[in-house]
Figure: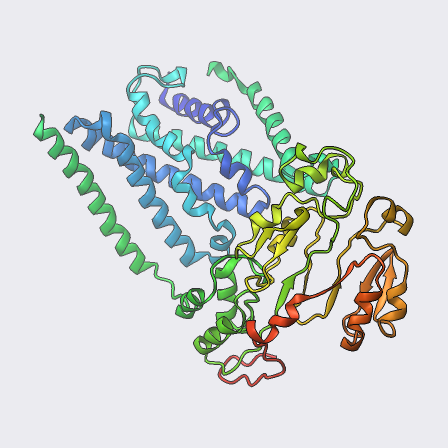
Length: 210
Length: 294
């Protein structure tokens, strides 16, 4: 298989077939928390995309050049990755505060909460799991990610996250003005919508044999 | 014990932390944003309970608004004059009038001994839950449910369950923040002026005859108050007496309370605390400094 095809499949697999939110149920708190206004959802998605990419790139470097050679990866990978993620989020917070105060106010508490966003840690640790040959991606069993592959994979996850965020927010904005029965108003109808979206995404299973 | 492993792990993680820390401190210099330092000082002066009585989302939001002159030094309703003075000194304004001090007043006098029960009260332990199920366990669909959801919500510890399963408000502690009214599923705890002479302790919009059939303390819309409390000060709207504090005169107070057949017009005990509790400086708006407000 040519490497371009491989990258494409990796990207599609990460974005659609194994969508981080709707198929693997990570990052649900921000999925429901920030999806009430489109501008916030897009901002949050970009923030997550950025944090995810930078932190998993840094994690890959640390894993391959520090943790593995020293033989301490087995028990130290989670603290190390959390350290990296926390720093990246902190950096991003300063950056957004400086250059987009509106976005900073809009994201409010969710910005620091990216630190504890499970999707980010999941993606960072996946470099480790895949090295161990326990990947969820059948494509990559007994296959270690190279650096470009880590980046492509992370971008795929981030784009998948952004895609469902935008779709879900668009639906929620419409639901807000739709005549929803009183007992379904608010969170209830959002949960149902999310569940149906998740069902729909299961239709991507086995796409291109992924 | 493998010393090298421990040393390796410690130094690796420590080193990574150090590098990231240095990077972050450099970034914080580079992306430094000037924040009004008065915000923090004001925030320290505010009660910090985030009650929301001022209309802002939490104390920090209020502090930001005060510092940016969008709101006056007397913004904090809960903090009263003391906090207002403190905030005013931070902002460099001389005197700040607090909005008239408020307290919560229970709009219901019907405890469980006075209102007929429709089904078992002990099925619930929360007002919101009881309110949802078939309009509550008592015959009155408007009155206090008596499970004390408001008592638990009070951020100032100013409420307790009193006689007959009705919440009792400790006027000395009540700051009029309005949290109890927000959590009450029937909105039975509106804020009234601390100096208001009396209030109507009933919320029922049922017709007099119906009210009489299930509650001995409810407003039966008899309109006696309309006649006895001074011109235009009381009006029966939707089968419930409503006071117009603007038109009410204190000289009618005793007669008004006395004449109410079901005793649902109640004297406001807050009146006795007006001087002791918070001296409300009215109409003294000598604002100076850069932040002159209306």
